[in-house]
Amino acid sequence: MRSSPSQDSPEMRPVLARSGGESFSSGQVKLLAAVLLLQLCYAGYNIAAKVALDKGIGQFVFPVYRNVIGFSLLAPFAYFLEKEDRPSLSLSLLFQFFLLASFGITINQVCFLIGLRYVPTTYAAAIQNLGPALTFAMAAALGLEQVHIAKRYGLAKVLGTVTSIGGATVITLYKVGCAYILGNCVTWSAWMVLQVPVVKKYPAKLSFSAFICFFGFLQCLVIACISETDSKKWKVHSVEQLCAILYSGLVVSGIAIALQIWCIDKGGPLFTAVFGPVQVVAVAIVSVLIFNDQLYLGGVVGSVLIVFGLYLVLWGKKEEKVSNQDMSQGLQMHALQIDPCE
Image 1: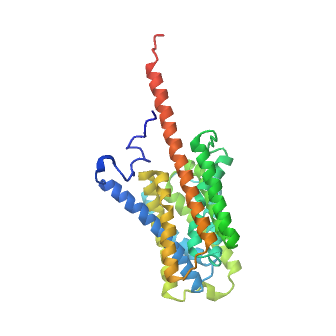
Image 2 (image 1 turned 30 degrees about the vertical axis):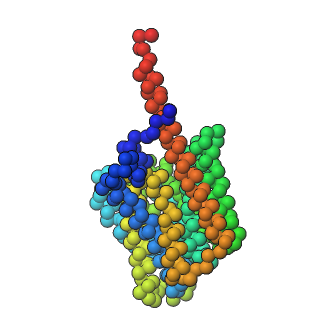
Image 3 (image 1 turned 90 degrees about the vertical axis):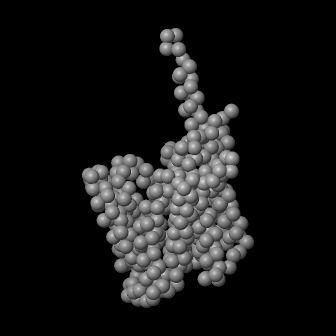
């Protein structure tokens, strides 16, 4: 019989239902509240960005304001909190930060904002759940992730990836603007994979985020200066625009990053990603009420496929971790049973 992982492991700490009908611990309640808040923060960004664009701000100007605010918030915390632990910088590291910013900030955010011009916010949020599947596919292609197609967890990850991509394809066939949101997901997944070796060399997470935000700001500024020649696109014309910019910079680029780091540390990446569909539901409700978004069959079917594929990939990751733990425990037991005198 396969043993289950310890309740003290990162993936099991946030389990919601405890045996015997016991009540949740305060730590579980805090973690659950934090993850839900994180998804609502990201859902709010979809709405805030849509409001800012509809009110007339330039689609290339918006990320400039967002990232300069985010950097201004992160930089002081990074400087003082990681002053003693921050590794030294080199030209090679700075160049890698610059490249990562192009994927994780510039191309990522610009594709998303262009996509919002053509796609209802509900489907933009749904397609973003494609991230874990694309990340797995890229990591597998680079040899950073083992597929193990013969095992059920490996098959689940592959089928989940194919299902999610199929769902995104269905939505894209109905709304061509979804291709930009898909580009947003691809660049985000590439950023997730490519940052792994860089973070190992530069583990100061706040400083790392601040540098990425800074270089993203510079890149977006150059693009905006070239593309947005109309001075009206640079002006904040309303309170709604100002609130949207402040929300995106302070909450999404600042608070949400710290909250996500805390959630992953306490509950693990699997538990954090499981609640991604909460963002879709929240955005759908607000979009129908505020923007009068119309839901169409292809979008609904595609969204369901993406979410189903997401859970297949996450289930496969969970089963893989349990299998690896069982194998490790079995090797340890076998080692203990060997008589050293033999």
